[in-house]
Image (cartoon, rainbow, N blue to C red; front, side, top):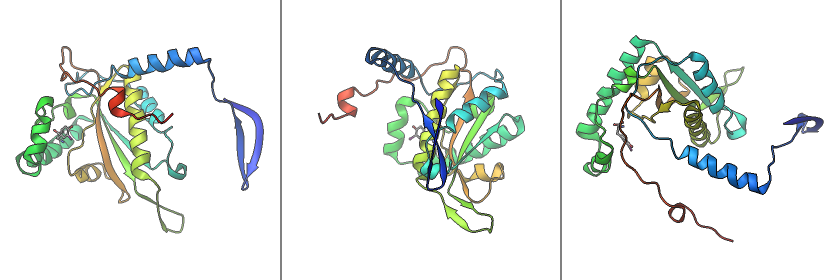
Length: 230
Ligand code: IYR
C-alpha cells in the first residue's frame, strides 16, 4: 500500500502510495460480486437482543472513519450505547418526537409515502438492539486559543462516513436502520455532547430478529439512476 518513497509538499511529508490493482477481468468480476453482495443489504426494524462484542462496533466505527472528509477534518463523533437505561431514555425521547411527527408534523402526503414501509411512532428497536450508534456531525472546532473554525462539507463528509458505516455493518453480518427522529436535539442533550455537535443519524445495530419481514422493494434500474456521456 505505502512504499518507502517520500516527497515534501508545502513542508508536509507525502508518502508513496500503491493502489491495489487487478486485471480487467478481475475488476469486472469483483465489481459485480460487490454489487450483488451490497444489494442483499436491507434496512431492518426488528432486532434480536443477542449481544454484539464491543470490538466489532469499534471496527465498524474505524471503518466509517476512513471516509474522505473536507480538509481531512473527520468532522464526526460516533456515540455507541449499550447501556440499557440510556437506551430506554433515548427510546422514550425519540417516541415523543415521533408521536408529534406522525400526529401533526408530517404531511398527509409524507405519511402516504411511508405506508408501504409499515412504520409508525413506536420504536422498540431502540431498546432491543444491543447497540445504538448515534453519528454526530461536528459543525465547527475550537483551536488552542478558543477561536471557532467551521468545518468544511460537513454533511457530505458525515453522509459518506455513514454510508461506509452501513456497508461495514453489512459486511460484519449485522443489520441496521437509518433512523432520524426529528428534531434530534434530544440526543445531544442525553449524551452530553458539546455545542459544536449535532445528531445526524441514529443506527440501531445488531442481529435481525428471527423470522423478520421487510417490505418487498425494487431498486431503480441502471437507466433510471444514470446517464452515460461517451
Ligand atoms: N422518522 C419517522 C418517519 C420516517 C420517515 C422516513 I423519510 C422514512 O423513510 C421512514 C420513517 C420514523 O422513523 O418512523
